[in-house]
Image (cartoon, helix red, strand yellow):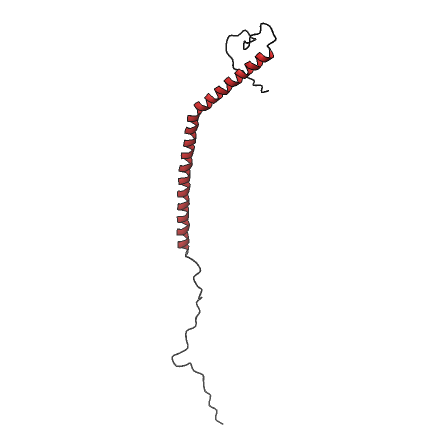
Length: 124
């Protein structure tokens, strides 16, 4: 018995190459691109903060100057209010003390010629 063994041989031209490398798709930008983006974003943020600080400083300056210019008006308004309250107090005093003989309206009961503004305001 003659047995011929036939050995398997590679195909003509050889087998195709075995792929052993990982074939992963690119997932997002590179580290350098991310670093550049974060740097640009931080630079823009610092720019906006700086501009906001400049605007806040300008608004504060404007507020201070408006208060400086309003002080005379507020003082005059306070003086008018104090004058009106003093006249009303004198009118009340005259009405209350009309039956008292030798009573001078507005004259101080103290023997001090210096003017003192009333420290207490009683609103009735």
